[in-house]
Amino acid sequence: MLQIFSSVMDGLLIGLVYGLAAIGLTLIFGVMDVVNLAHGSIIALGMFFLYLFFGAGLHPYLSLVPVAILGFFFGVIVYLIAVKRIISGPPLMSLLSTFSVSMIIIGIGTALWSTSPYNINFKVETYNILGYTVTSARLIAAVAAVLVTFGLYFFLYRTVLGKAVRAVANNREAAELMGIPSQQILAISFGIGTMLAMLSGALIATLFPFTILSGGVYELKSFVASVLGGLGNPTGALLGGIILGLIEGSVAPFIQISWTNVIEFVIFVLILLFFPTGLFGGRK
Amino acid sequence: MKFLKSPFFWIVIAVSLLYAVYPKLGNNITLRETLVLSAIYVILATNLNLMIGYTGYVNFGSIVFFGLGGYLTLWLIGGYGWNLYAAVLFAGVVTSLLTLALGFGILRLRGAYFALATIGVNEAVKDFVSNFDKWGGSEGIFLPFSTYKSMGGAVHALWTVYFLIIGVMALSLLLSWFIKRSKFGLGLFAIREDEDAAIVLGVKAPVYKAIAYSVSAFLPAVAGGLYFFKNGSIVPEEAFNLHLSIESIVMVMLGGQGTVTGPWVGAFLYERLRGLLLTTPSLSNFHLVIAGVLLLLIILFAPGGLMGWLYKRWARVRGVLE
Figure (cartoon, rainbow over the protein chains, first blue to last red):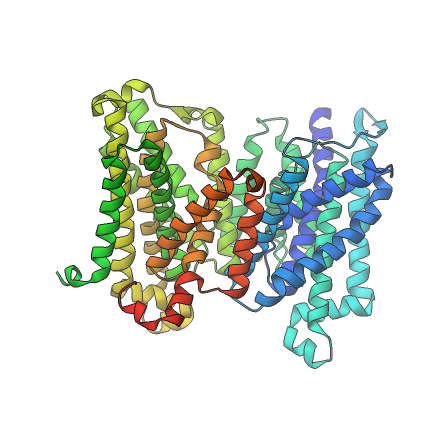
């Protein structure tokens, strides 16, 4: 019983981090109808940026700040180069252009760091709460994910810029007529989505070893989580991430770990088929 | 027999014969292996074009057909001693039927949702096969060397398989061409332009889409069977390699979606380029980067691909190259 409980708790904590990654994906889709196929490679890039700052002597959690700033500007640059021109084209175009960005990132990353695994080695405390053992890294990663999500909500609902983002997401032309510079807002939104992806990658890097190709797994998990929650709905994406983590945690004691992916993808396709707007409704 | 008068038909036949005869004449094995890859790329790109270029549905997971065809074929040959021809045909038909059933479901999704679902299907099948003990799990299936004996020894068998793959390539191109010329193809193009308008005008969109999806699965599945039979082994990572399915999209885009010649030329050029990048030591580390930059440039500046550019430049080309 305790084993199941701790497995579910572990799932919940990691689910929050999945949720953060999924929010990055769903925000970009919600604002500009672009499915960012560079998401996974950006997550991997976040892991390696953390690794670089950590290597330069910064504490991993302190390194999250420069990773976030780098992530934002990286996203803005990607938007300006690869997305801006094709934003109103058919979906194939944006899928392919973001995918080509992913190829470029992974290509350069492979040349720089090869595909061998890296890890962040730092002191991790272990707590024991009523027989349930949890590491400080897992707790902090989950708390950081929640804090960033709150920050995003504060930004979207309480700041002028955030309201402009939501206006552009709702109706770009109407927003433009109201004097909102939609191109800048789109660039900022893409930057924020990228920032969230990099942050989640950095948090994952504090938990597990990683390679430049690790992003792919988390990209697929982000897809599943954001589709579960309804593409374009950030709260849904977070809940989707939690559900995903709980599924992983609750089936882990009973079946081989490799089957969880099969279950996730079957759920993914079924949700797409029967609840295309997700369990919690589409974009808000 | 109107098609016999078309220059395009004879171009396809001539090039396929050239593919088949040229390496055989010099008994050039290296060239044959290069051309096998080239032909496989043409098959994948041409059939994928039926969905992307004709119907306007982006299939990101088209490689699942190839892998499933390979697995079914090797399983039937290795486990039940079927002969190659029966096995690949059976694999093609089964894959096609499965795809038809799947198509009625997931083709209700449009745009990005459909693309995501196809990725999901490929990954689900890959993870399933990796765990499926009957098909060897993550170890895959190996064919014993004795399998090739019934085909007159390994050397002879490999040549036979090579000719078959070239045949499938020719069939893919002709199929693509016939569909483009048919009323069915016209319906697909109508769906691509505006699905709702097409339905109003009497195109049975759900049926058309599902048939196009299923047709686009048949020849890749056969090709997968032949290819993995030639290799003698199959593993999930190689069979359901999502990367190859996206590379096929690059080929389609490079040549020009919606044309018959485009994916053909695109696949050929992409194979050449990839070979060049991989064998040049200073570039091999960056082959992914260069391919990525190339794709980005095509999308941003030449979304019509090579054929789009050619059509604009010399409109008369349209009469010869479909």
